[in-house]
Length: 138
Image (cartoon, rainbow, N blue to C red; front, side, top):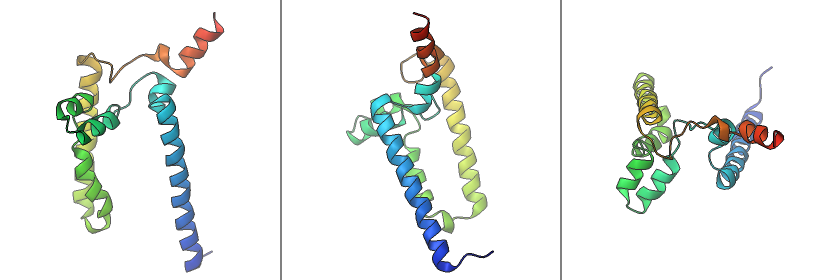
């Protein structure tokens, strides 16, 4: 069954609305509890510190920005890539995506095992399940 052009447009717009609602809900959750992944698991994600890095960079505190997440300048690479994705060769786009993923994994592992600060942490006892367990075993 083929959808009419109008039905396709409605479906396309409804998907954008749903994504917008999800983004708003995640923003509210983030504002209240911090990173959802860290809140649920107690383990920082590969992007932990990115928001603080971008806020620091916006105030021209670049040393702090690199402390929070050293890959924050990639945001300015990915903004135009996301906007002009349809105009970029698929192989080039996939190569840049692959390099970015590898960079994030390498930085994440380095920060997880060799840098001891409060940005990237491994604290499963502070996960939602760890906190629930502490509460129930009091």
